[in-house]
Image 1 (cartoon, helix red, strand yellow):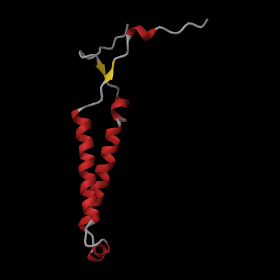
Image 2 (spheres, one colour):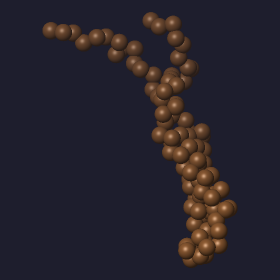
Image 3 (cartoon, rainbow, N blue to C red):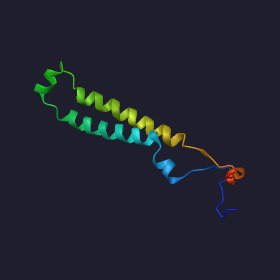
Image 4 (cartoon, rainbow, N blue to C red):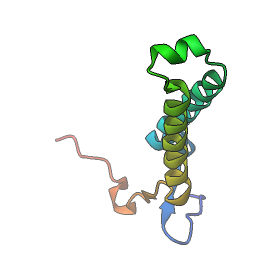
Length: 97
């Protein structure tokens, strides 16, 4: 028997599992790069814009990456990772015959 109490719904979450959820990593990176590109897009010169057919590509891609990153983080927040509690019957060690 362990002294740890399980949540009433039978689900446990380890800190490592929550921290390394792939949605958090992808969302954080896209959000960070999106912010950097949006800031770079505000400082784009006219000469650089002319090279891109008068499209501020840094601004538009930055906004897209920012939206995608925030959607990943929202998905992680709304639907958090749920790990099933380990079965108590699996505590037996295999026999070495």
